Figure 1 (tube, rainbow, N blue to C red):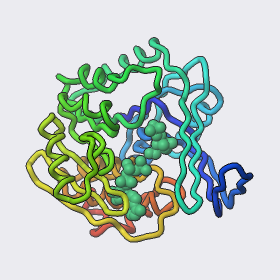
Figure 2 (figure 1 turned 90 degrees about the vertical axis):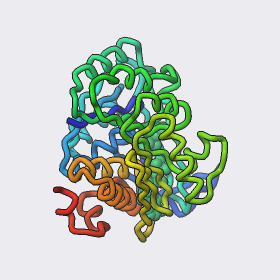
Figure 3 (figure 1 turned 45 degrees about the horizontal axis):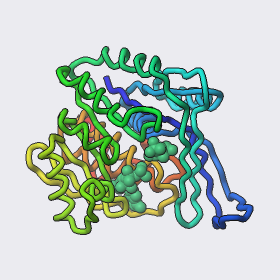
Length: 306
Ligand SMILES: Nc1ncnc2c1ncn2[C@@H]1O[C@H](COP(=O)(O)OP(=O)(O)OP(=O)(O)O)[C@@H](O)[C@H]1O
Ligand SMILES: O=P(O)(O)OC[C@@]1(O)O[C@H](CO)[C@@H](O)[C@@H]1O
Protein backbone atom coordinates (compact mmCIF):
# COMPACT_ATOMS: atom_id res chain seq x y z
CA UNK A 1 0.00 0.00 0.00
CA UNK A 2 1.14 3.57 -0.69
CA UNK A 3 0.59 6.33 1.88
CA UNK A 4 1.25 10.04 1.56
CA UNK A 5 1.54 12.49 4.44
CA UNK A 6 0.77 16.20 4.04
CA UNK A 7 1.08 18.07 7.32
CA UNK A 8 -0.25 21.28 5.82
CA UNK A 9 -2.59 20.55 2.89
CA UNK A 10 -4.45 23.36 1.18
CA UNK A 11 -7.05 24.48 -1.25
CA UNK A 12 -5.14 26.03 -4.14
CA UNK A 13 -6.84 29.08 -5.66
CA UNK A 14 -5.27 29.20 -9.11
CA UNK A 15 -5.81 32.33 -11.17
CA UNK A 16 -4.65 33.50 -14.59
CA UNK A 17 -4.32 37.23 -15.17
CA UNK A 18 -2.93 39.46 -17.93
CA UNK A 19 -0.68 41.16 -15.41
CA UNK A 20 -0.13 41.56 -11.71
CA UNK A 21 0.40 45.13 -10.53
CA UNK A 22 1.11 45.49 -6.78
CA UNK A 23 -1.08 48.09 -5.12
CA UNK A 24 -3.74 47.95 -7.90
CA UNK A 25 -6.99 46.01 -8.33
CA UNK A 26 -6.00 43.13 -10.60
CA UNK A 27 -8.69 41.23 -12.57
CA UNK A 28 -8.36 37.56 -13.46
CA UNK A 29 -8.98 36.00 -16.87
CA UNK A 30 -9.81 32.65 -15.24
CA UNK A 31 -9.85 31.12 -11.77
CA UNK A 32 -10.36 27.72 -10.18
CA UNK A 33 -10.04 26.01 -6.80
CA UNK A 34 -8.21 22.68 -6.53
CA UNK A 35 -7.13 20.37 -3.71
CA UNK A 36 -3.51 21.11 -2.81
CA UNK A 37 -0.50 20.21 -0.72
CA UNK A 38 2.45 18.19 -1.93
CA UNK A 39 1.51 14.75 -0.56
CA UNK A 40 -2.10 15.29 -1.63
CA UNK A 41 -0.90 16.06 -5.18
CA UNK A 42 1.21 12.89 -5.19
CA UNK A 43 -1.91 10.90 -4.21
CA UNK A 44 -3.98 12.51 -7.00
CA UNK A 45 -1.40 11.73 -9.71
CA UNK A 46 -0.92 8.17 -8.40
CA UNK A 47 -4.69 7.74 -8.67
CA UNK A 48 -4.64 9.17 -12.21
CA UNK A 49 -1.99 6.55 -13.06
CA UNK A 50 -4.11 3.75 -11.57
CA UNK A 51 -2.27 3.29 -8.25
CA UNK A 52 -4.26 3.43 -5.04
CA UNK A 53 -2.87 5.39 -2.11
CA UNK A 54 -4.17 6.79 1.17
CA UNK A 55 -3.53 10.45 1.90
CA UNK A 56 -2.81 11.16 5.56
CA UNK A 57 -2.79 14.71 6.88
CA UNK A 58 -4.61 17.24 8.99
CA UNK A 59 -7.64 19.26 8.00
CA UNK A 60 -9.68 21.97 9.70
CA UNK A 61 -12.78 24.08 9.16
CA UNK A 62 -14.94 24.44 6.06
CA UNK A 63 -11.90 24.54 3.76
CA UNK A 64 -10.81 21.20 5.19
CA UNK A 65 -14.25 19.73 4.45
CA UNK A 66 -14.13 21.08 0.90
CA UNK A 67 -10.65 19.58 0.41
CA UNK A 68 -11.87 16.17 1.51
CA UNK A 69 -14.93 16.31 -0.75
CA UNK A 70 -12.87 17.35 -3.76
CA UNK A 71 -10.39 14.54 -3.22
CA UNK A 72 -13.22 12.03 -3.02
CA UNK A 73 -14.46 13.34 -6.37
CA UNK A 74 -10.99 12.89 -7.86
CA UNK A 75 -10.84 9.29 -6.65
CA UNK A 76 -8.07 9.80 -4.07
CA UNK A 77 -8.57 7.97 -0.78
CA UNK A 78 -8.02 10.07 2.38
CA UNK A 79 -7.63 9.36 6.07
CA UNK A 80 -7.25 12.90 7.40
CA UNK A 81 -7.18 13.81 11.08
CA UNK A 82 -9.67 16.61 11.80
CA UNK A 83 -8.47 19.54 13.92
CA UNK A 84 -10.97 21.32 16.15
CA UNK A 85 -9.66 24.84 15.54
CA UNK A 86 -8.57 26.90 12.55
CA UNK A 87 -8.99 26.41 8.81
CA UNK A 88 -7.13 24.41 6.21
CA UNK A 89 -5.14 27.11 4.38
CA UNK A 90 -6.00 28.58 1.00
CA UNK A 91 -2.86 29.01 -1.12
CA UNK A 92 -3.04 31.56 -3.91
CA UNK A 93 -1.28 30.79 -7.21
CA UNK A 94 -1.15 33.67 -9.67
CA UNK A 95 -0.10 33.07 -13.28
CA UNK A 96 0.41 36.49 -14.84
CA UNK A 97 3.42 36.26 -17.12
CA UNK A 98 5.38 34.91 -14.21
CA UNK A 99 4.17 32.66 -11.38
CA UNK A 100 3.56 34.18 -7.93
CA UNK A 101 2.47 32.07 -4.97
CA UNK A 102 1.10 33.07 -1.57
CA UNK A 103 1.06 30.07 0.77
CA UNK A 104 -0.80 30.29 4.08
CA UNK A 105 0.44 29.20 7.51
CA UNK A 106 -2.25 26.63 8.15
CA UNK A 107 -3.93 25.57 11.39
CA UNK A 108 -2.13 24.66 14.60
CA UNK A 109 -1.66 20.90 14.87
CA UNK A 110 -2.16 19.70 18.43
CA UNK A 111 -0.02 17.09 20.20
CA UNK A 112 -3.02 14.73 20.34
CA UNK A 113 -3.45 15.00 16.58
CA UNK A 114 0.24 14.21 16.04
CA UNK A 115 -0.09 11.15 18.28
CA UNK A 116 -3.06 10.06 16.17
CA UNK A 117 -0.92 10.28 13.04
CA UNK A 118 1.81 8.17 14.65
CA UNK A 119 -0.83 5.56 15.59
CA UNK A 120 -1.85 5.35 11.94
CA UNK A 121 1.78 5.09 10.82
CA UNK A 122 2.30 2.15 13.19
CA UNK A 123 0.09 0.04 10.93
CA UNK A 124 2.52 0.32 7.99
CA UNK A 125 4.04 -3.00 6.96
CA UNK A 126 7.11 -4.24 5.08
CA UNK A 127 6.75 -3.42 1.38
CA UNK A 128 4.59 -0.35 1.97
CA UNK A 129 5.60 3.02 0.52
CA UNK A 130 5.37 6.28 2.48
CA UNK A 131 5.69 9.70 0.84
CA UNK A 132 6.46 12.66 3.12
CA UNK A 133 6.08 15.85 1.17
CA UNK A 134 5.85 19.55 1.82
CA UNK A 135 6.54 22.07 4.51
CA UNK A 136 5.41 21.63 8.08
CA UNK A 137 3.54 24.31 10.03
CA UNK A 138 5.84 26.46 12.18
CA UNK A 139 4.09 25.19 15.33
CA UNK A 140 5.55 21.70 14.80
CA UNK A 141 9.09 20.64 15.72
CA UNK A 142 11.63 20.80 12.88
CA UNK A 143 12.53 17.13 13.36
CA UNK A 144 9.05 15.69 12.84
CA UNK A 145 10.01 13.90 9.57
CA UNK A 146 13.03 12.48 11.37
CA UNK A 147 10.78 11.04 14.13
CA UNK A 148 8.61 9.36 11.52
CA UNK A 149 11.59 7.73 9.84
CA UNK A 150 12.98 6.68 13.20
CA UNK A 151 9.67 4.96 14.05
CA UNK A 152 9.70 3.08 10.74
CA UNK A 153 13.39 2.24 10.63
CA UNK A 154 13.02 -1.51 11.25
CA UNK A 155 9.97 -2.00 9.02
CA UNK A 156 11.37 -2.17 5.48
CA UNK A 157 9.04 0.61 4.33
CA UNK A 158 10.22 2.55 1.26
CA UNK A 159 10.18 6.20 2.31
CA UNK A 160 10.18 9.07 -0.17
CA UNK A 161 10.95 12.55 1.18
CA UNK A 162 10.31 15.72 -0.78
CA UNK A 163 11.35 18.50 1.58
CA UNK A 164 14.02 21.15 1.83
CA UNK A 165 17.02 22.09 3.98
CA UNK A 166 17.27 20.54 7.47
CA UNK A 167 13.89 18.82 7.17
CA UNK A 168 15.49 16.73 4.42
CA UNK A 169 19.10 16.59 5.64
CA UNK A 170 18.05 15.25 9.04
CA UNK A 171 16.28 12.19 7.62
CA UNK A 172 19.15 10.99 5.44
CA UNK A 173 20.67 8.82 8.17
CA UNK A 174 17.51 6.66 7.98
CA UNK A 175 18.24 5.82 4.32
CA UNK A 176 15.12 7.10 2.53
CA UNK A 177 14.44 5.23 -0.71
CA UNK A 178 14.10 8.46 -2.70
CA UNK A 179 14.62 12.16 -2.17
CA UNK A 180 13.71 14.78 -4.78
CA UNK A 181 15.31 18.17 -4.29
CA UNK A 182 15.26 20.57 -7.22
CA UNK A 183 18.64 21.91 -8.36
CA UNK A 184 18.22 25.16 -6.38
CA UNK A 185 17.27 23.33 -3.18
CA UNK A 186 20.24 20.97 -3.64
CA UNK A 187 22.60 23.95 -3.92
CA UNK A 188 21.02 25.66 -0.91
CA UNK A 189 21.72 22.62 1.25
CA UNK A 190 25.43 23.16 0.60
CA UNK A 191 25.26 27.00 0.65
CA UNK A 192 26.18 27.17 -3.03
CA UNK A 193 24.69 27.67 -6.48
CA UNK A 194 24.93 24.71 -8.83
CA UNK A 195 25.24 25.48 -12.51
CA UNK A 196 26.71 22.48 -14.31
CA UNK A 197 25.46 18.87 -14.51
CA UNK A 198 28.77 17.73 -13.01
CA UNK A 199 28.19 19.93 -9.95
CA UNK A 200 24.63 18.66 -9.58
CA UNK A 201 25.73 15.02 -9.78
CA UNK A 202 28.59 15.61 -7.31
CA UNK A 203 26.22 17.18 -4.78
CA UNK A 204 23.54 14.49 -5.28
CA UNK A 205 26.28 11.96 -4.45
CA UNK A 206 27.07 13.89 -1.27
CA UNK A 207 23.46 13.31 -0.17
CA UNK A 208 23.93 9.61 -0.91
CA UNK A 209 27.08 9.62 1.24
CA UNK A 210 24.89 10.95 4.05
CA UNK A 211 22.44 8.05 3.57
CA UNK A 212 19.96 8.73 0.74
CA UNK A 213 19.46 5.71 -1.54
CA UNK A 214 18.26 7.36 -4.76
CA UNK A 215 18.51 11.10 -5.47
CA UNK A 216 16.27 12.60 -8.13
CA UNK A 217 17.20 16.19 -8.93
CA UNK A 218 14.49 18.03 -10.83
CA UNK A 219 15.55 21.00 -12.92
CA UNK A 220 12.23 22.45 -14.18
CA UNK A 221 12.60 23.32 -17.89
CA UNK A 222 16.01 21.56 -17.97
CA UNK A 223 14.62 18.11 -17.11
CA UNK A 224 16.05 15.90 -14.36
CA UNK A 225 19.05 13.86 -13.23
CA UNK A 226 18.77 10.63 -11.26
CA UNK A 227 21.66 9.19 -9.23
CA UNK A 228 20.71 5.65 -8.19
CA UNK A 229 21.84 3.45 -5.35
CA UNK A 230 23.39 1.09 -7.97
CA UNK A 231 25.77 3.89 -8.95
CA UNK A 232 23.97 4.62 -12.24
CA UNK A 233 23.33 8.15 -13.47
CA UNK A 234 20.37 8.83 -15.75
CA UNK A 235 19.59 12.17 -17.37
CA UNK A 236 16.27 13.11 -18.93
CA UNK A 237 15.70 16.07 -21.19
CA UNK A 238 12.46 17.95 -20.55
CA UNK A 239 9.45 17.78 -22.84
CA UNK A 240 8.58 20.73 -25.02
CA UNK A 241 5.32 22.53 -24.45
CA UNK A 242 3.74 25.72 -23.20
CA UNK A 243 3.82 26.19 -19.47
CA UNK A 244 0.39 27.11 -18.08
CA UNK A 245 0.92 26.52 -14.33
CA UNK A 246 3.94 24.63 -13.04
CA UNK A 247 2.61 24.30 -9.47
CA UNK A 248 2.64 20.61 -8.59
CA UNK A 249 5.15 19.64 -11.32
CA UNK A 250 7.57 18.32 -8.69
CA UNK A 251 4.85 16.33 -6.92
CA UNK A 252 3.71 14.88 -10.24
CA UNK A 253 7.28 13.86 -10.95
CA UNK A 254 7.52 12.04 -7.60
CA UNK A 255 4.22 10.23 -8.29
CA UNK A 256 5.19 9.35 -11.87
CA UNK A 257 8.59 8.10 -10.70
CA UNK A 258 7.00 5.91 -8.02
CA UNK A 259 4.38 4.54 -10.40
CA UNK A 260 7.09 3.74 -12.99
CA UNK A 261 9.36 2.11 -10.41
CA UNK A 262 6.67 0.11 -8.63
CA UNK A 263 5.28 -1.16 -11.94
CA UNK A 264 8.55 -2.02 -13.69
CA UNK A 265 11.37 -2.12 -11.12
CA UNK A 266 13.39 0.00 -13.56
CA UNK A 267 14.89 3.31 -12.49
CA UNK A 268 15.15 4.41 -16.11
CA UNK A 269 11.43 3.87 -16.78
CA UNK A 270 10.65 5.52 -13.46
CA UNK A 271 12.60 8.62 -14.49
CA UNK A 272 10.85 8.72 -17.88
CA UNK A 273 7.37 8.46 -16.37
CA UNK A 274 8.30 10.95 -13.64
CA UNK A 275 9.58 13.53 -16.12
CA UNK A 276 6.54 13.12 -18.36
CA UNK A 277 4.20 13.54 -15.38
CA UNK A 278 6.07 16.67 -14.22
CA UNK A 279 6.02 18.28 -17.65
CA UNK A 280 2.40 17.27 -18.33
CA UNK A 281 1.36 19.04 -15.12
CA UNK A 282 3.39 22.16 -16.00
CA UNK A 283 1.51 22.31 -19.32
CA UNK A 284 -1.97 22.27 -17.65
CA UNK A 285 -3.74 24.67 -15.31
CA UNK A 286 -3.65 21.91 -12.66
CA UNK A 287 -2.36 18.36 -12.18
CA UNK A 288 -2.10 16.26 -15.34
CA UNK A 289 -4.50 13.49 -16.24
CA UNK A 290 -3.28 10.07 -17.34
CA UNK A 291 -3.96 11.02 -20.99
CA UNK A 292 -1.87 14.20 -20.64
CA UNK A 293 1.04 12.17 -19.26
CA UNK A 294 0.79 9.32 -21.78
CA UNK A 295 0.99 11.82 -24.67
CA UNK A 296 4.48 12.86 -23.53
CA UNK A 297 5.93 9.37 -23.04
CA UNK A 298 8.80 8.14 -25.25
CA UNK A 299 7.36 4.60 -25.36
CA UNK A 300 3.90 3.00 -25.32
CA UNK A 301 2.31 3.31 -21.87
CA UNK A 302 2.14 -0.50 -21.63
CA UNK A 303 5.95 -0.53 -21.21
CA UNK A 304 5.54 1.39 -17.94
CA UNK A 305 3.04 -1.10 -16.53
CA UNK A 306 4.94 -4.39 -16.63
N1 LIG B 1 8.91 24.66 -17.75
C1 LIG B 1 8.90 23.33 -17.84
N2 LIG B 1 8.97 22.72 -19.05
C2 LIG B 1 8.98 21.37 -19.15
N3 LIG B 1 8.94 20.55 -18.08
C3 LIG B 1 8.88 21.10 -16.85
C4 LIG B 1 8.84 22.52 -16.65
N4 LIG B 1 8.76 22.76 -15.32
C5 LIG B 1 8.75 21.55 -14.71
N5 LIG B 1 8.83 20.56 -15.62
C6 LIG B 1 8.90 19.11 -15.35
O1 LIG B 1 8.54 18.84 -14.01
C7 LIG B 1 9.68 18.35 -13.27
C8 LIG B 1 9.67 18.94 -11.88
O2 LIG B 1 9.74 20.35 -11.97
P1 LIG B 1 10.54 21.27 -10.96
O3 LIG B 1 11.99 21.03 -11.08
O4 LIG B 1 10.06 22.66 -11.20
O5 LIG B 1 10.07 20.71 -9.55
P2 LIG B 1 9.78 21.48 -8.21
O6 LIG B 1 10.74 22.62 -8.06
O7 LIG B 1 9.70 20.48 -7.14
O8 LIG B 1 8.33 22.05 -8.58
P3 LIG B 1 7.10 22.53 -7.70
O9 LIG B 1 7.62 22.89 -6.33
O10 LIG B 1 6.59 23.71 -8.49
O11 LIG B 1 6.15 21.40 -7.71
C9 LIG B 1 10.91 18.73 -14.11
O12 LIG B 1 12.00 17.85 -13.86
C10 LIG B 1 10.35 18.61 -15.53
O13 LIG B 1 10.29 17.26 -15.92
O1 LIG C 1 3.78 25.34 1.62
P1 LIG C 1 4.32 24.05 1.06
O2 LIG C 1 3.86 22.86 1.84
O3 LIG C 1 5.79 24.08 0.85
O4 LIG C 1 3.72 23.91 -0.42
C1 LIG C 1 2.35 23.83 -0.63
C2 LIG C 1 2.07 23.90 -2.13
O5 LIG C 1 2.56 25.09 -2.72
O6 LIG C 1 2.73 22.80 -2.75
C3 LIG C 1 1.92 22.24 -3.78
C4 LIG C 1 2.68 22.23 -5.07
O7 LIG C 1 3.86 21.51 -4.94
C5 LIG C 1 0.65 23.09 -3.83
O8 LIG C 1 -0.46 22.30 -4.13
C6 LIG C 1 0.59 23.72 -2.45
O9 LIG C 1 -0.15 24.91 -2.42
